[in-house]
Image (tube, rainbow, N blue to C red; front, side):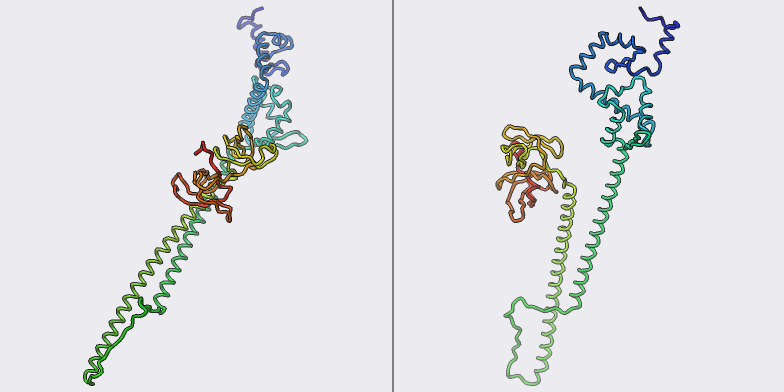
Length: 393
């Protein structure tokens, strides 16, 4: 029997019946087809198109369940965000708003069989705040972007405060050095200083002839006073030269100390930025320190081939690929002269050569071989550097 022609009373009646929501039990999610009655749904189940969809579903049901679940969750959260925002609302009200769409994904085709299970999932995944009352479950959408913006603003304000504190600290240190310099200069200017000759054996002697008459005594006395004044002027000039040399050396020391302080401040800044709670890197050789994988792998060394995340890696141990957390691994220190990778701290990610092992300090002395700091000698703890594999060199 063919379909009625368009515009006939029968066709208009059928079109009116197809509007709006129909019964859930007569909806086929795989075919996305809504039947109006039991007879129509029964005919659909025996159709060839439905049988083909069932065969596809039977081959890999997990893929279809995951797809339907993702669509259901995305559309549900979209309705919640657009209609209610971040307000606290009953979960059933959101669901009623969601199912107004005729072609929505039905819940019985997802991994959640009830609305309660879905609400609990939203709460555990951190996407909504949930609470239960006598009237049922209430949910409130968590605005992730707003939280990220707030966290970013908080970090920015904290960084500005730290920069301001460091700037004020630097100004205070410079003022303190200036006060010390002024005090030293004033002390040198007012306090007497000891005159020291370079040659201790050298003596100032005066030789007067024995047979001199009284008339020439006053002329000799005048000559003696002139000689004393010349010696005083030479002493003053020598003192002024030495004072200038001391001032210049003091300035150089102050400049050097200020440069050292700036370098130390830069080191502390780099240390703060690059110090993480994870240290795994691809291509390093690590030692397994857990017995859960068997005694054959206990204290065995392997190469990190890839990182699953920041804390978990795949380690190749004699052809066996093991998935291990960084808590069960430790760094390996090679022989002197071998290459290492700095895995944490200020110089994180740079390659270096092992110069010496400082056993008393539990540290290694490294020479960086790449980057802007190439050639710099640094000392880092054992856990901040690790041996590099041959393929990574």
